[in-house]
Image (tube, rainbow, N blue to C red; front, side, top):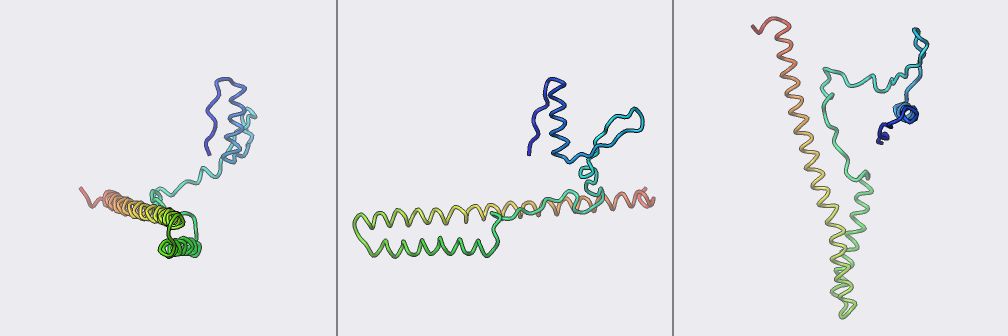
Length: 155
């Protein structure tokens, strides 16, 4: 997603400009005066509305990119593995019991890591939502002050 560093020589800058034009989907347009070529970037011109409520809002980030059903399937498989190893650990002795205990604790760690990450993820999304609420409140206050100032009510 990053563009290359700008080159030191003019020949290299033409190649870097070509990379930037392709990356940002620039369209060439011939100028009336001088006949030069100017690139327009229509996707970059639109931008967010200046007065929109969602202009500065952070979108919540989904966890792991998995659907709810796939997450449940993964949790069920790992949970079943933990349960089976817990039963196996108590049913055998000797070296097999030690191996079952190792894999039992290993499976617990495999189960615990995404659970901790999910908790951190939920907390981060909650903080994003708090920042969004603060931004909306500040935007409403600024809009109210601007409207009062333009109507001449506030002196």
